[in-house]
Each structure stands twice: as C-alpha cells, then as structure tokens.
Image (cartoon, rainbow, N blue to C red; front, top):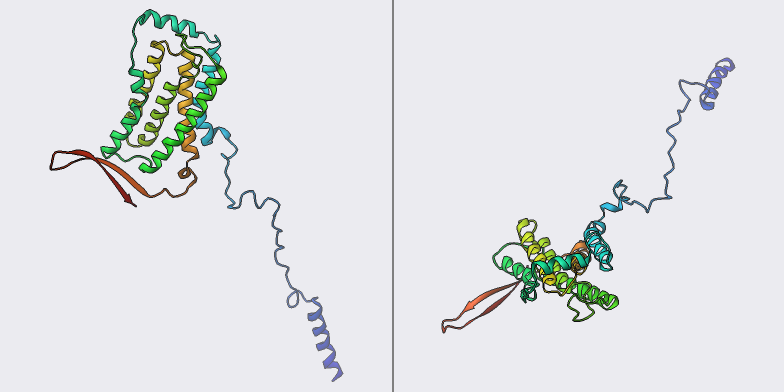
Length: 272
C-alpha cells in the first residue's frame, strides 16, 4: 500500500509545484502597457492635425494679409515714400483732369449696398439670412468708422485742396470697399460677378476722390485696406462663424400697390 501511495504523491507534488511543463506550467500573458496621461488634454479626440501649427493657413491670417498690405503701403507712401509718390500721382491726375469736379463719389460710396439689396430682392440666395447680414453690416460699419476716424485725427494729414487735416485715410473709399467686400462674401458662391461689380464701383470712388483733390494716393489705398479689413473682422467675429445657429428669421421687403392708386413698401417677417 505504501508503494502505491508514494508514486501518486510524487506526481501530485510535481503538478502543484509547476515542475511538470505539460500539466502544471502557466504561460504568462501579455504585459499591459501603461497609458500616457501626461498630454491627454492637448488633443482629446486623438486626431492628428499637422496643419494646426501652420499659422499662415489660419482664417485670421488669410483675412488680414491683403488689407494689411494695403494699409501698410498707404502708411509708407503717406510720408513721401515709394517709387510713385503722392506728389507724382497728384501731378499726373491734375494733367488729365485739371478742372473736372463731381459729386458722384458721394453717391457711389453706398452703391454696393444698393446692389446687395437689389440682388437679394431679385431672389438670389445670400450666404446669411437677411437679419444676420444686417448685423454684419452694422458691425463692419462700426469697426470701419472707429478705425478710420481714429487714424484721421491721429495723423492730421492735410488734404490736397487744403480744406482740412483729415485726409488720411479716405473714409469714402473705406466705406465703398467695406460694402463691396460684404457683397462679394454674400454672393460669391452664386457668381463672382457680383463682387466684381461691387469692387469696380469702390475703385471708382477711390479714383474720384483723387480727381476731386480730396485725397492723396496713399489715402485711398489705405482706405481700401481699412474697408476690407472691417468687413473681414465683422465676419470673423460674427456668431455664425463660431458654429452657433442663426437667429432664424427672414426679413423681406416688396413694393405694394393699393386699388386706390397708392404705393408703399410691405414688410414680411417669416420665422424659420
């Protein structure tokens, strides 16, 4: 009996102690790699964005590079710099238009807004609904007026005709290019020609301001930059740019006639 129990006891000890590779050995599993949590808040989604560090691809840079160049050129040439100075430009303009004067520039500076309204009434869908477009216009006007008049009173540059010291930059030109930029942005997805027409009007305002001896070359170039920059900043800071929903109202105007022969303007307010 003792001879039978001893071999069985030896086998049992081998199994328990793991010395039998065929029966008792437990293979180790994969060792878990500890998670790196030191940078977990830098990219919560875990999506790589190689273009994030490229500042020149940002919306702010693309929106400000052109107007910044125009404003910078205007400042540089306002004090006599550049290969074609203010004096050279004014001399050539006086040769071509020695006595020509017009008030057309006072009318054309708001013509791009008239184009905006006419195209909208014609049924062309704009980028934003009409309430948000009006908010953008109001914001752009505030930025443009504050910036241009602040620079005017700081620079105190005399006009070519000597009427006052508020020549730099051109407020008429800034106004026209602000309106043209809004027209271009609102309808560029439909046709680029709306923007081409608006910018042509704005350029005509700039030219007429120099022909009327109200502004130097540097004034209108900088004014164009201030106008474009004001429009771009208005769009960048608008709440639709941050992914929020628009107000959701559509405002419309239409001419109205009565049976008695009267005329008027009807206002529609349609919730969406």
